[in-house]
Image 1 (spheres, one colour):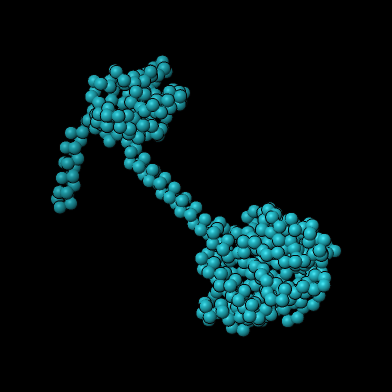
Image 2 (tube, rainbow, N blue to C red):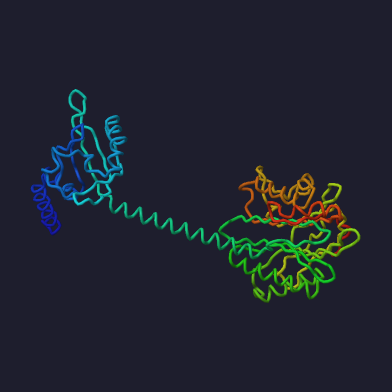
Length: 430
């Protein structure tokens, strides 16, 4: 017989001695959970030592004197009488019911209770056997999880508020009034927790001219916010120095590459334009840096794209090519600028709005710039999950004096406002 046989023999001896000392009575009284038995009316007829230790009662204080419900808190008693006991008698058992028992010193102990009904030979209830498990650690764990969840909710709300506040600083609080121009804009954020990269603005230049832009930064979050802020202020500063659209985009391109580094992936697509009053309406010059073409809203109801296809993104290349187009905006005509959040939004059938966008826009109400913007916003809202990206929209419309007076009261519409119409592209150059 080898060493392994000696080890097996010693283990067998220990197991035999343990078996001799273990009794069913001791197992019942000193189980790791509480046991008790009651009559069908609820009076306790037997209880183990484990549960007595938890309660702080002596055996004679409980057996034959108290009901199981007497060990519960007030709320527990109500639940026992209205749910626990009826359900137990109806189906013969209940499992993992969360209750609270009250100790002799009035402490509350959270427990989980399982109970089964023992039947007499005539199939009537003769006894109820109940197992009680200490759930204090589980309750503490659940409360800790609840506190953590509440804290996470607070942090998420705080982050959302910060993101919303920061997003608002990246957009003009209100578009300025321009004589003879009806202006409206709309911004949709795809995520309340994340800062988007779409932006727009309209601002005065010298000699009664106006500059405007709308674009989309590559990326989201704080980095995109910093990038967007840099773009807005650089565009404004560059336009004051030289408002020519190509010069403005060239200056911005140089600034972005210097700021982000020659190998940086930080870039944007952008349309920048200059409005010059004409009689009537405005002359409009647009320069596009890789951005979706603007749509001319004709006063007769038609829609035509302004040909700026071929322009390259700003900040990506050392010497990008920008596409230029010139348009005359007559009273009753309009110009729609938008980011790819609008054109790439998907219909329920999976197709993008870009497929047939001019036809969609042509079918919208055309009364005011606000009316066009609100109608497009309603279209986006109807897409639900089909709208997966940020979207910015701006509409400029030329008006005559009577139209301007009639529509000036609409500037406080339900979305960010401004009223105008804008015109049909007359010519385009590269």
